[in-house]
Image (cartoon, rainbow, N blue to C red; front, side, top):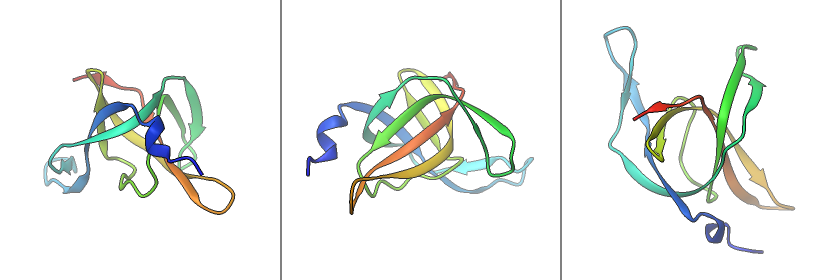
Length: 108
């Protein structure tokens, strides 16, 4: 089995949601953490948990076990994104990687 870390040659900054603020329910973000990842830029349209259409213009891949969740914030290449979807990529009998789809970004 190849080590997925070999493919994670790009870097991004991750900020996890740690709570919800009192003002308009804005998320409170934790400290920034630099992570290695693999970025695939492509436009995808999916259905979110509520059935609404979600547009993603980037998919990031991380090593198995990377802790990242929906609504967290990811910044790379001068753009900031909200995490729209997280799933585990699987090999035959093992977790191979973490796949993260990002919503359309804004300049950081």
